Length: 113
Length: 114
Image (tube, rainbow over all chains, first blue to last red; front, side, top):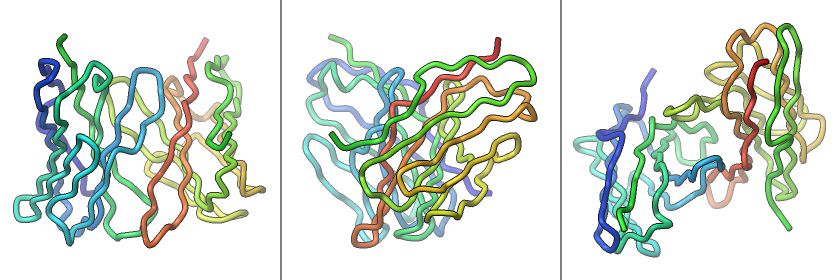
């Protein structure tokens, strides 16, 4: 079956800098994408989502960019803080509103003080 | 205080034993899910339920069983047929809001084999 993957398993960023976490997906039928943040020993926490009819969506300090042409998704975190250290997952579903999500492997983001 | 409660936080299983992981939600969500997470890995879907008294197998259902007798509860049993049960188990729930199904997760249960 189709799978969602990540380019880099780990990323270290200086505190205060911006970070970009990438996600490649292979399912051209993917219609809905979500980013989750998982801190050590905890469950994933919803960050932001985007539908395939959009190419950009902004939240508080976070921006998700979607490039359907190359099947690429990215999460930008502005002015990173120590609390941003976590594993970040992208997830996708084929149909907007479909309850089944396919998760990527995850990227571990470490913020350097 | 609304949310998803998983218990216990840590669980140990002996060889040949069945163990049941609890998941309760008071969010009035229709759908509930169970995922398995291995170290350094993503989440893999075990079972999911979109409505009471109905559930579907996910990608790795072998060796697991579930029930959905109440909207609030979706317990997962790890049977003796699951030969490698050591993992972090996550329960989630979601509700259809304007076509979106954002899944919200519990804090997880870490299962180890004695």
